[in-house]
Length: 152
Ligand code: RB5
Image 1 (cartoon, rainbow, N blue to C red):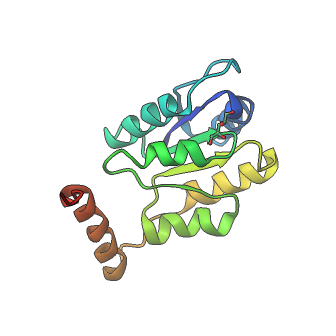
Image 2 (cartoon, rainbow, N blue to C red; image 1 turned 90 degrees about the vertical axis):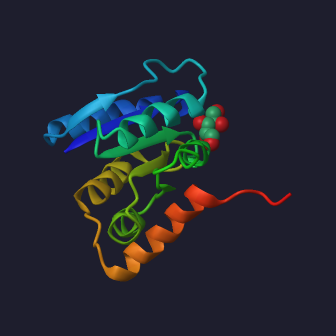
């Protein structure tokens, strides 16, 4: 599986550990930065990761900032992205199985490295269960993306 990973300065060190972890486990990984821990802006990495996923250059994305929150908010602005902050393995697995989550967001100031690896493992080894009710819900979300406009 091809995975894209990105982080701001807050997630830079965790990104490097996860990059080694993923390569060691045989994943093909695109690293979109940051390439140092100088202050940077998480929306830039959210965009880079989201674009790779939307353009099918990677099947899944991993985004890291200090809390996971900012990166997640930014990533979800891109049509077709279903990103969530998960700091437990249950949500990381179920988010894919039920909700077809395609970007996992992590807060490097929230989770330790070993837990982050477990969460990543759960995220990447899960598959969307294309049950009718799950697909129906996803269709509703896609409809929001396609049609929703502010009144007035
Ligand atoms: C950067 O200091 C920090 O605000 C950012 O990494 C992230 O936590 C935002 O949600």
